[in-house]
Length: 184
Image (cartoon, rainbow, N blue to C red):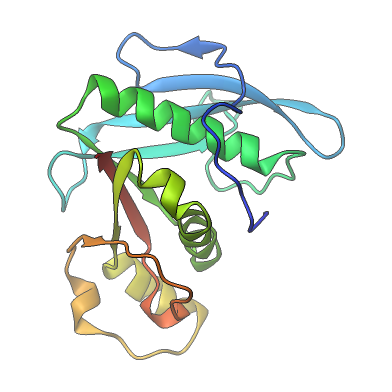
């Protein structure tokens, strides 16, 4: 995955299909091997178990059962355009649902770091449109104990959103694993 993703809402892929309730967006991306792959962005109909009015946003290709596979690693020709398309879909959903929040789960520490870096790299641009919060909670604690030996911070057992500030670095032991977006 690329670390220096440049978000530009004017440079997103064409959305091929959108559900009436804006919970599904479909588009295609070209991989580095020149294969065109259909991708989907889905927004859950149920709010997050620990955070009311936060709806999970996931993205990736659809598998053979027509279910989103958000764990696959793809080598896109243009990561910036893919992420710009995801942000465009999020902004579209939130504009129509202004009291809702969208959450993105960094399903592993590497993805959480990628999302955090992407937010930091595009901080000024993103914060023109969104308030963005980071959450450290139990899933990161469980991942930390599996991926690395780090002490458990009892504050990580709570789902408390923190407004993300412009920072140069955050240690992996304090990394957010869930990111929440709302309209500004």
